[in-house]
Length: 72
Image (cartoon, rainbow, N blue to C red; front, side):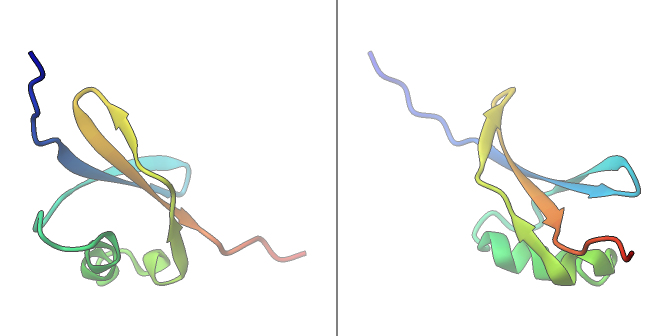
């Protein structure tokens, strides 16, 4: 028998070498809308991109990755 379950979304932001786990503020929002929501608290998200989702420990993980490089 096949059983379908709804997986929770979790967003991971790597900032200053640390992984910050962000909860899903609204499951109906798109991933881009969630990124815009958190951009007020984490300005680095204004230039970030989203990686493909991965399923880990019964949650769907999205990673916000900064596209800003280092100067020099």
